[in-house]
Length: 178
Image 1 (cartoon, one colour):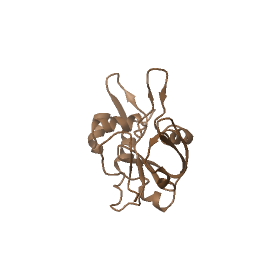
Image 2 (cartoon, helix red, strand yellow):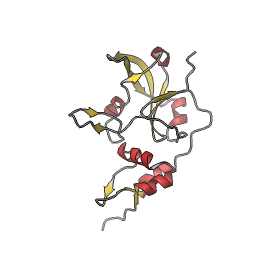
Image 3 (cartoon, one colour):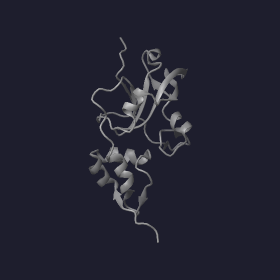
Image 4 (cartoon, one colour):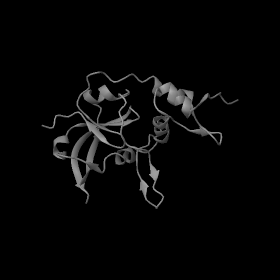
C-alpha cells in the first residue's frame, strides 16, 4: 500500500508562508515547493515540501553585504526562444546560468568578490561569489563568473528567509559603492 501524501493548494500554501499568491506561484514555478500535483483546475504541493519552507527562520537583522538577485522561473517566450530562468530541479550549471547573465550594472568592477545571493519570493535558494566579469552584450549588460559560496558570510543567508521586497527580476545590493 502506498503511503498517504497530504496535498495543499497553492493558495493555501501562500497563506501558510505569508506570501502573496503571485509569490507562491513563483515558488512553485521555480521548484522550491517540490512536485506539483493538479486536479485539472488547481495546483497542489505536498505538506512536507511546504513545511520545509515554512520552517525556515528569518535572516538575522545584521547581514553581511551582498548582492541579492531575484530570478524568475524558466519561461518559453513563445517565439522559439527560451528564457533560462532559475529552477531548483535544474543542474547546478543550469541554475548558475540562469542567474549569471545579463545584468545592467553601474561600476561592475566594484562587485568583484561580492557575495551573490539568489532568492525566490524571499527564500534564499543559493549563494555564490562574483569572481570576475566575463562579458558584456551590445546593450551594456554584464555576464558574471560565479563560484559557489559556503563561507561564513554565505552561511548567514543559507536556509533563511529574507524580508519581502517589491520588484521584479533585479539585483539589490547592500555594498558600499562610494
